Length: 46
Image 1 (cartoon, rainbow, N blue to C red):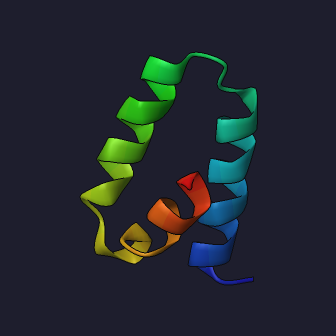
Image 2 (cartoon, rainbow, N blue to C red):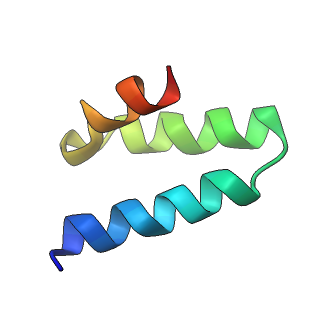
């Protein structure tokens, strides 16, 4: 597995365990600053 793949699995786990909308939005906003997730997060969040 690549580092990106492992990271995505971790992110998915975090999102699944996150129930607070505000915390989730803050988490996604942080990831948007990273180019690696620039296209992954918007499509996944929608």
